[in-house]
Image (cartoon, rainbow, N blue to C red; front, top):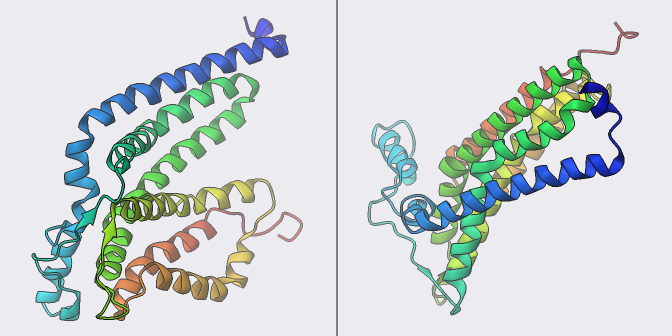
Length: 268
């Protein structure tokens, strides 16, 4: 059997790949249908939750502000609410569809990666299999951790600030559903990708392209860059919201530095 696999023709490999892609499509379709059914509930209780002052992150800010640990400006009254408007006739239907696909992809991401792994696995040595298994597992964990950080920290801070920001009293703010969903998807997926930094560093270290001295040499540059990034995401006046974004991202930088070799063998 192993010999037959090793001698499989190009068209044989293409057949196997087609089977894997059909399975992936099946997983996404099934999850997409399930997501479409539950989307009205999911929309109200998850996606739109940061638009209300009762959201868990805002309640946490109220708690620590009330205890005098942080400035009272961080407190968010229960009356805080962001009203969204649907500007076009088809907006809500297409948002329903796109949000269902997005949720299906997120939930099915580990299964999709596993199915792709079953296609690649026969061509790898045992040592390579062990390394890639660890990379896939680690990458999945970090991606979902980044999604959670984006949802519970970055998104609420951005929503609270941007929804209350006024350029002039003569301008009436009106936030469209499309605009909110664009920011929702962008911020959460961006944080999910940012949290893949340790995996990227580990892979580059394994390839001999990255060493720990790089992180020491450019640490000051990284601090400035991350502060600027945090300032762009949450451009508020208080330091807490700035560091709420800065600390997780900088922790990723330091964690990444521990996953790469200290130096090349000849340097040791």
